[in-house]
Image 1 (tube, rainbow, N blue to C red):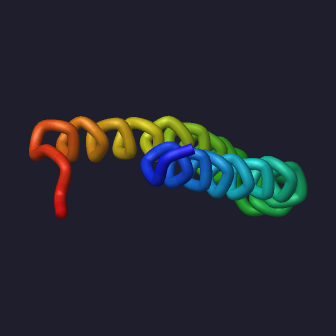
Image 2 (image 1 turned 180 degrees about the vertical axis):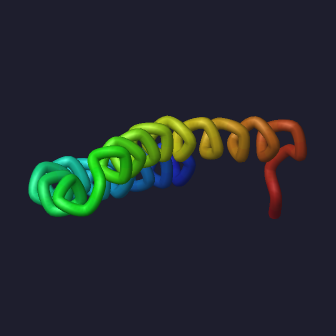
Length: 73
């Protein structure tokens, strides 16, 4: 396993751990927020799901940028 593969695997593991923790905390958070406003609870859930996809989109963008610039030494 080369350095690039190892970094990608570590990044994916960290992202999935963060998202897994977020989905674990989401139900109690949604219940608490729905006592304030149902729309607030919906908004937080939507932002969390969109952030999940945004993380991978930004990572892919960064990797494409690094591939174009070539290996750095």
